[in-house]
Structure formats: C-alpha cells, structure tokens
Length: 79
Image (cartoon, rainbow, N blue to C red; front, side, top):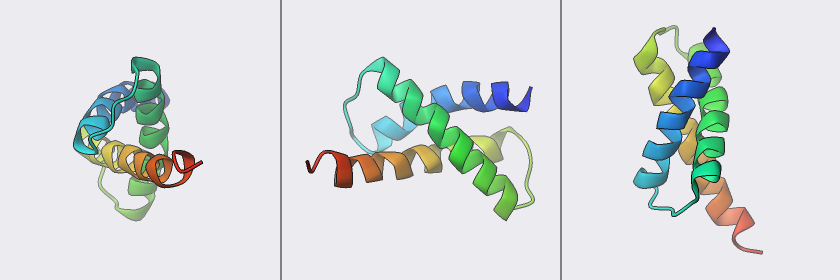
C-alpha cells in the first residue's frame, strides 16, 4: 500500500512540480516525473526526517519532481 500511495501522490506532485517549474510537458511525462519524484523525494524525506504522513510524502514528492525537472532542463534539453 505505501508504494501505491506514493504513485497517487506522485501524480499530484508531478502536476504541481511542472507548474511550479514552468515546464510544458505532456500528461505521460508529467505523471512519470511525479511518480519518480515521489519515489525519490518521498523515500529520501522519510529517511532524513522522522516525519510521517501524507504532507511529508507530498512535500518530498514535489521536491523530488522539481529536482528531476531541474536536471532535465539543465542536462537533457542542452543536447
């Protein structure tokens, strides 16, 4: 169940992160960024901070998705 929750949170986080970072992506890319960001950010945040619950996962997911967008904008688009 926790992985399923991260996927659901990731979809919302991908949407929020793409809007905050002002990047235009299609729906599949937005969902992929959100899910990967949720997995990276959610797990990292839970390891670094002993805070549990929905808000910690959402914050971590948004931060993780924003980090992926930053990497994408600086390294992938530059090619």
